[in-house]
Length: 238
Length: 89
Image (tube, each protein chain N blue to C red):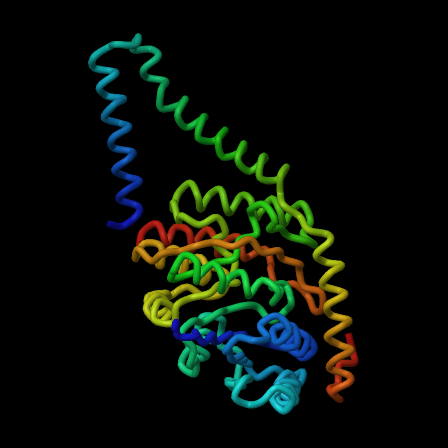
């Protein structure tokens, strides 16, 4: 009989006290019968995110919910590295804590991986039955422009480069993450481009993206400059 | 191979064809000189077209927001019942 895979879900948090509770409930609701663990990497949130996680640990069990906190805000890329060190699964899923990534899509990531044997399954917002809610025209324009630029110059082979809802085979994530140097927004793009260049098998599943319900969106104007710098950087290094 | 080299290679190939056209004078040379301009203009048009089409058919999901609110209410209800503090939206 086929060995049952274990999944480690890594969620970086900063001031997501309410969201993390809701998210964990929804993860358990949608992955009921699977073998999985949730690894929460909290960067010293002052809002009591860690207290909430401790309460969730009592509710769901400390072996299912792991709190791996760091003392201060150290960035997204290193948060995944940190969580990865503590991951015991065969596959690692990364997602955002702000409920823009809905756990109801987790089964489709896992199914897609099983069907295709892919190394990476990435969620895409830009296909049929995927989509975005809560973006104004400017945000859509920026997103489309960024996407066309990247598709024209990088030929990445995936339709959504900056999405951060992904499933990785653990060894693949370990391999790719070590060669990635970008921070913040560009990090996700560099991850998928490098993985694609290394010849890993990447599949896509449609996801919907509902922009932050609670809290404020973290995208600013300087992101565009960062994105363009990242694009040029990837042109020369991958 | 670095990706920039692939793109440069493509550019070199295109230039070679262009120079070939200039030398062989298959098309009138006044036209041939303008070919790179046409190429750049059509690339620009392609870009704008792609952005425009992308915007027109931007997939949106207003129903997902409603479903999410329902899920949030359900999650809050559950956590509250278990004695977790989920006040303060």
